Length: 543
Image 1: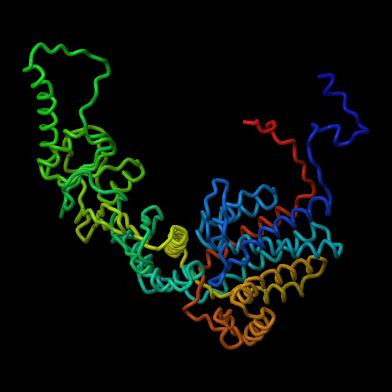
Image 2: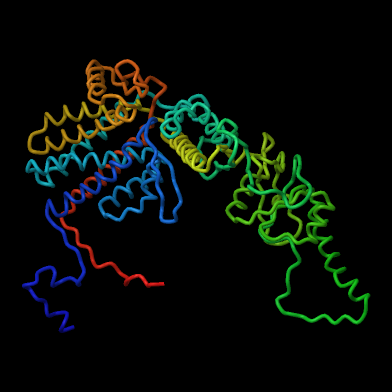
């Protein structure tokens, strides 16, 4: 204790902390280092923004190759170490959880705000003045953004309206396939909404099955479940089937204690298994007597049990994953039994058709539900086909974003113009607001407005256009009262187009992305010291 109290005041901070620590402070030592790290991360993902965004090829620590333009995936697989860039990663993660889309907007906008503050710091503004200006600008943005709403989705069960909303989201990830994928996503989501009450989508209820081979246009929606393995027996089809689900294996239970059987003659050997066979026959017969046509086992199915299941004409499927077992129970309305025996009428499930199919050289079991399901189909599966694994994975990410978009649309139906039109209009309004503000905060407010320009500028850059010319044309259009004019990614005309009802974004997704981006940027700006202790652990063993 006495040694710990003997602080060498001449040594300063180094004498107070353990040896091996790192310490950085001040504008150049901490703030600008953090800004540089955040700019680096934002620069990586910004070129992936929009339909013409570039893919990133990431090789993670397991040497798995990921080719994608999805910001959430890129940021997660990069394994970021810098604490400031980590804050941007956490903001993207939160956006992915809340809305499932616009993660690139979150990270890129936060990076752009920090890039702008770099110039402000060099001009002589204090960090607190920049933070105050950014907060005032964001408060103004919160009030101005709802004013840009062009329409609200009144009926979330209208397939055409949902397709219109989800198409731009899918186009941003899979440009060229959006017109084919949008009806699939809408059909799958509408199949899980139920027939009555307020429409809502649970993202866990829309499953994605990936089978390599064929092409994207062979993808389809199945109202029900797809199990990625074949059946256990020879029976491969069942119509209007009652289903018994067992969370346990279908086999004779083993005794807890070991026993020894003494056989004195050949008859003892011949009749040794008779009682076990008789008991198993009784159990399987009692299951068949309930009207069961399909048996699902969560564990092992013994050869003897399989023999009797085949004898009574039942289709047997083995599902080892408890999560898959829960979903199949949800899809068929059945209850998983932990005992081996006949199910009651309430515990039995129902499915219109259970078929074993071969798709792309792989056997799968398809549980398809029709209109006979009691409260609509509770699970839908989108069966995706593509030539390579990386394309399949990227399709899955795009579909996942589409499902999240429809979920958000059911809760908050407000729509704003897309293609950078909303950001440019906000930039104009915030710039005008900054001109009315006294004090040094006005410089930060103007920088906030300029940072919003990055969306139309990046869309123009990624589509091979001259960003300065496109921005000038956009400002001219917006100044004349056309608030819905955005970037034309094909480059036709002067690079601008009226978004109309075709290119729209969800208001709630934009609000969430801006909020998280500003919070992340302000948090990074408020840091004036970085103190890192010595990492735990010794050197690597020479094995």
